[in-house]
Image (cartoon, rainbow, N blue to C red; front, side, top):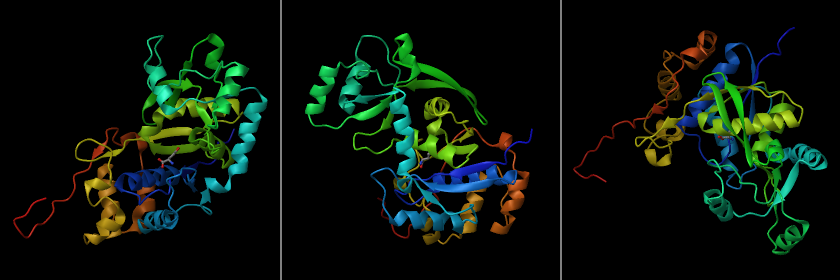
Length: 321
Ligand code: GLU
């Protein structure tokens, strides 16, 4: 039986300039896909309210400036709402959803309640068994409900179940599948739903992304099963951390491409910084990247985060800040 050719994707949210951590993940998604001659698709995950339109183009420009390419036209989740609605309708029809009126605060309080452990982040199932009367009352309060998946776990009376997934870089990972949100109260499809629908619709069979998303993976694999689609393979890659071991952020200095260029670096310097952080040899020009992809061995990648040290700042005077 012949294997389908690799189709990977890179799925940034256009909410800001990409920083070195994002660019490093983009480079990795590119290397994984191109290492076996696969395709790489670009998908903007723009269902989030924090989207700012200027970042669609600037993100494309920055990744292209590094010498990375992708196949076809980038797609935007905001243009694909119909697809998510269809999947949600299907789940509703099959009785696999329920409305949830909980506020974030109510969930936090319920998770902390003494009656039975609810593992970190797992929805405790509060609205799963609301009577029709209670549901009507909460609807009358005016806050539109979110829609949650009635995950199979409820059948045994538990509020959550666990699922083990296999990750190409990290091995097996067992994580929670709770009654997670499919559609937010403002009717926006939730990330976990959209990502599964999109990966299936775009024929994605390889997901390379930051390992902060590993805990979402069991939920996504579970949902793929319910929707009757094969989950992709997963390679979760370590994040880049700033000086205090926090996720890299703007406060960490010149961490975006535009800032690096303002320091006098060339895009190639940034590519080589990223390659070096992955234990890969520097290149003389972006045209050498396909050769790097050919030699690319995921098993040799670091599994620990890259701790980014900002370049030393030259000061001319005696002031510090
Ligand atoms: N949009 C997510 C991000 O920017 C990536 C989601 C994914 O790769 O599944 O971190």
